Structure formats: structure tokens, C-alpha cells
Length: 248
Image 1 (cartoon, rainbow, N blue to C red):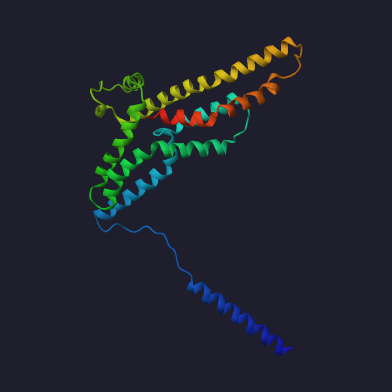
Image 2: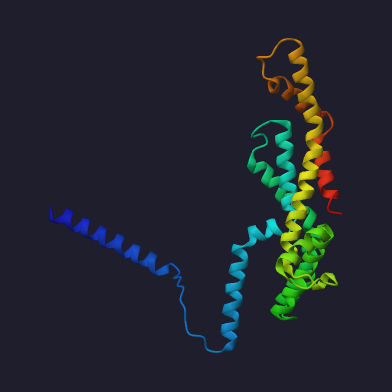
């Protein structure tokens, strides 16, 4: 009995020693806040805090200042016009909208990378200069899509002097004007998409009423015809092509 107890104690001791050795070999990770030793430390800390804030707001910025708003609304209108409910699913529409956004915004992001990000990473310009250079291409993109009427609306609401040039328009005025311009354009495209499918629904409804089949839901008959029409005209190709060219 004592021999078994001794073997058990030896095994437990070996296991504990192995666990302690494994724990001692693991890296130690610690996060702390220390006092700044100089102005440079404070500046770096503020830049890190600003970077984390920008990363947390990245989804909202992607929606507000890019082509994502117009694309996702038009794709949603297309699905509603066909009447397929959840086909394609929301995840597919959002994924397609994101990739189309990356495609249409790639030239702008390339300019931002060349004129702001890379020089800042190579310590060729300050953070403020990089921010100014990076905002420029995005503002030019928004100015190409926004209507003057929408800019005038927010200029009046902000109670600022009438800008003489595009550089005089503040960014906080340009962004909401750009958004409502995108909404108007997206709804205009969506209306045009609805017209052929609406005609099919009307023809099917009139045909069923003339045949006395008033209890049969028209959507049950029109849905296959709308899907067939959409496939025959290569609808996704036309919509993606039109959306991409609308930003040129």
C-alpha cells in the first residue's frame, strides 16, 4: 500500500513539475498605462487613440463617404422588384455591395495610399499633412456625385457663408449632402428597375381576372415569368455594369 502511495505521489509531483515548466515557458502579456516621459510619448498615445477611434468608425465611414449606399439600395430594390423575398439572402447582397464598393473606390483609395499613407509611414510628412492629403481624393469623389442643390441645403442649415470654391465647402457639410444625393440617385435607379416587373404583374393580374381565376394569387404566376425575364436579359450583369458606370 505504501509503495502504491509513493508511486502516486511521485506521479503527481512529476505532473505538477511539468505544468509549472510549461507555464514558465509561456510568454507573458501585460497591458499597462505609464506616465509619459516627454511630449513625444503624449503625441504617439494620441495618435494611437485616434487610430483606434477611426477603426471603430470604419464601417460607418465606409457607408457614408463611398459608393456603398447607392449599390446596396439598388440591389435591395432589385430583389424586391423580382419578388423573391430573401433570395439572394442579405449576406450575399451585402457581400456583393462591399466588393463592388472596393472595385469602384479602388482608384480613390490608391490615391490616398500614394499621397498620404505611404509618405506618413515612411516619415516623409506629419500626421496632419497626411490627413489633409488623404481627405482630398475622397472629397473629389463626393463632389463628382453630389448635387449643388443638396450642398446649398446644408450650407443654409449650417448658417455659414456661401462657398466660392469646392475647397470652401466644409467636410461636415459635404458628407450629408453626398448621402442624400446618393439616396436620390439610388431611388431613381430602383424606380427604373421596377417598371418591367410591374408590367409583368399587371399583365398576369388582368389575365387571371379575365379568366375568372380571382382566388389565385397573381404573384404565384408572375414570379416565374419575372425570374425568366431577369435571366434572359442577364439582369445581374446589366445592373452591376450600370452601377459601376454611374460612378464614372
